[in-house]
Image 1: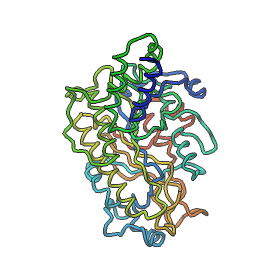
Image 2: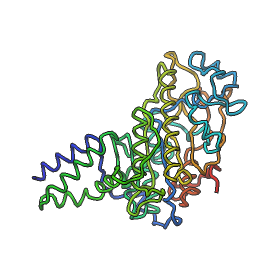
Image 3: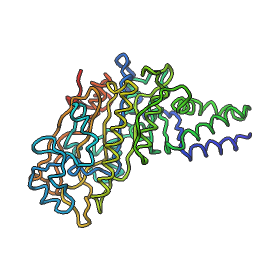
Image 4: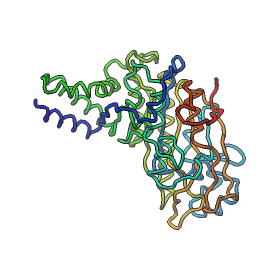
Length: 410
C-alpha cells in the first residue's frame, strides 16, 4: 500500500469517528511554566466535564420558584410551581431532572449558582473560548486551561492519554498541546479503530514508517481505550440518544482500563474526559426542547454514577457541567430565551459535599441589560479541580488567585 492509500484509510477512519490530534508544542505562555510534580497519585482522581453547548437556561433548570418576579418575567415558559422539585423553601429543580434526586439526597450533588465572569461576552464563540482557556474577558490565550495543567504537572507516562473527548471534534480545554483522543462519533469508534489497526498491521513498508511513528501514540491510545474481550462488563443500562451513547462510550473506555476490581491497568487510563450535550441555544419554543435536554442530562449523569460505582471509581471521580453563558431572565417574544450572563452548574461525585452554593438569583436586581449580576467567577470551579482535587498549584495554571469552592470532602 502506498502512503497515499494509507492516508486515505486514516482519513476515512477519522471521518467516521476517530480524531487523532498530534501533540503540538505548547503555547509559549504555557511553556514558560517550570513543570512541578503533582501530588502523589493526583491523576488517579478523574475529572469528567459535561459541556452544555449553546448556553443553558439556568432559571428553568434551578428554579427560584418562590420569587414572584420569576412568573412575571416568564409568563409563558415559566415552570409551574407545583411541578418544580423543591430543594428548599425557595429553590427547586426542573421536573425533568428527577433522576438527579438520588444524588441530591445522598449529598453527592452540589449546585453552584450565579456562575460567569466579569464583563460577560454574549458571543457563543468568544465566550466559550474564555471558558476553555480560563482567560479574562479582555485576554486572548491560545492554550486550554487543562492543557496548561498537564504542562504544569504532566500526566503519568503510563496513561493512555491525557484526556478523552467524546461527541465533539473541538478540543476546548485541551486545545494547544494536550494529548487528547477525540471520539467524534462514539457509535462508530470501534469500527474506525479496527480499520486503522488493520491497515497498520497489514502494510509494513518503509513508506509508512514515518507516518506510523507520528500517529502511533494517539492511535494506540485510542485502541487501548476501546472495549476488548475480558474487560469489566458493565451492568448499567444506558439511556437512548446521542448523549446516552456518549456516556456509554466514556464508561466503556474507563472499563477497558480497569481490572474487575476497579483498579487502573498499567499503561491505560486518562486524567480527564469531556462530553458534549448539544442544543441549549433555545431562542424559540423553549419549553419542550429544554425539558428533553435536561432529561438527557439527568439520565446520562445517573447512568454515569451507576457505572462509576460498578467500577469502584465514584469516590475518585468529579463531574462538572459548564457552558459558555446562561440565558436572559426575561422570556422573548418567541417563547424562548436569548443570550444572558450567569447560570448554575452541577458538580457531582462520591466526595462532593452536596448542597446549594454561590449566589441565588435575585430577580429584583437585574442590571441595565436585564441580566443577573455575576455571583461566582467560573475560575473558582477550575481552582477547585486543580487545587483540592488534583493537588496542583491553581494560581500558576489560572494566572491568578481564585479561591476554591468548599465542595469537596477530605
